[in-house]
Amino acid sequence: MIVDDDPAGDWTAPGVYRCAPGVYRIPLPLPNDGLRAVNVYALADGGGLTLVDAGWALAQSREVLSTALAGLGAGLVDVRRFLVTHIHRDHYTQAVVLRREFGMRVALGRGEQPGLEALRRTRPGQRHHREQLLGLGAHELVRELERHVPPPVEPAEYEFPDDWIDDGARILVGEGTPDQRELEAVATPGHTRGHVVFADPAGELLFAGDHVLPRITPSLGLEPAPAASPLADFLTSLELMRSRPDAVLLPAHGATGMRVHQRVDELVAHHAKRLDTTLAAVQDGRSTAFEVAGALLWTRRDTPFGELDLFNRMLATIETGAHLEVLAEREVVTAEDRDGIRHYTS
Image 1 (tube, rainbow, N blue to C red):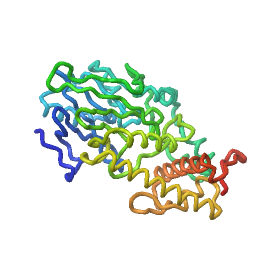
Image 2: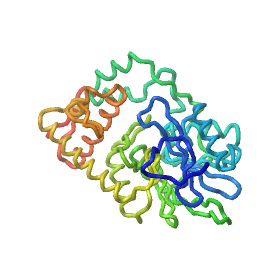
Image 3: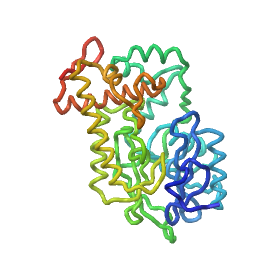
Image 4: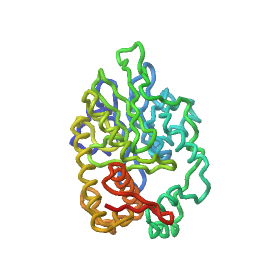
């Protein structure tokens, strides 16, 4: 059954939700994940479908997707292509697995190639963020991480796409049908270095992936081959979204319906405040990203760093490093590497 999307409803509830004519939101489940679900968007494409993002390659996710497509009178065989916003496993891996069986095309932003190559080289037990965390002064976190078996990375789930998407690419969906629409791919590095969003100017829609989320801020630099300054990239990408015509936000996590400009303004304000609190921690004598992260509050609930679980303490440390790098770029703090650890002073 197809129902009209309700921004006030439970956005994670399985189903098929009409966002606009010919556009349907399908939430797919995530395992043991605070995000709970990822939104995949199905676009009518002639006699088939184009999907924006794909979900995590899990049996439950595939079952929910198959059931939802049946509600549209279609099946997995009717998916013509996946347009994937970035390489994180909850967006990319199911596309790769389904392609082997059904032959649909998979497209991904060209800037994700270095990260994809690193993932394909992953060795059993390898932790991509170990050296990064050591450089941030998080030796305690690294020791704790090494007491746990890392989640497996299956290189086969990170095969290359059929098509690399370039910034500004025009993608025609449903050509010659009443549902015809032209999407513009817009490079929005920050969350990952090759993240892209898909703008539908005529429909005033933005398929935003994880770049603009309605309730949370996306992680920064959590990838096997991160950019030098992911926060600087992210803020520049937010400025780009603010300079473009406003649109209805169709995010990968969270309810639809918010306006893009409103949420971008909130995200910019959040990071400005975070930069101020980060600077204050340095001025109080904390010099490494790990030390600074420990002095800050996290999540919308203002949770102390020590009360976060291990994964989120890792995220918080990496994000703090990204904020410190922006402060260094703005010459508000001075950065210096000593014995393999990056230190900041005001």
